[in-house]
Image (cartoon, rainbow, N blue to C red; front, side, top):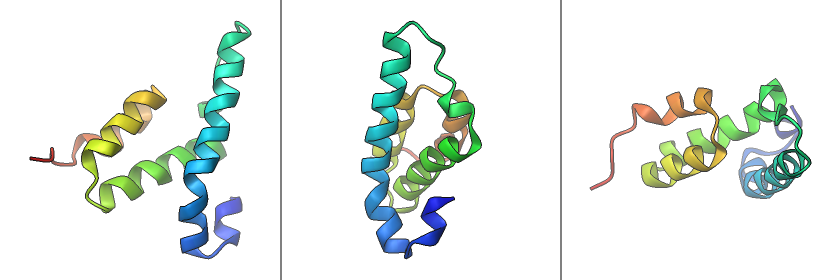
Length: 87
């Protein structure tokens, strides 16, 4: 994966921009009446999984849940289900 070629801090800083780009692609597919199959690609799912994991690991569980809800992809939900809710 491309992120493995970068320093960890660089990769983490690029995740939000990568997600934004992927979301625009997904919206374009949906807007054109096509199936959104991007998340079925392991490389694409890995970007979303990493972002969700980073949010949970940094204690931002509510943000992780919102991110997963917005992504609307069931396999991603399992990553934050076990995270405790924030007070």
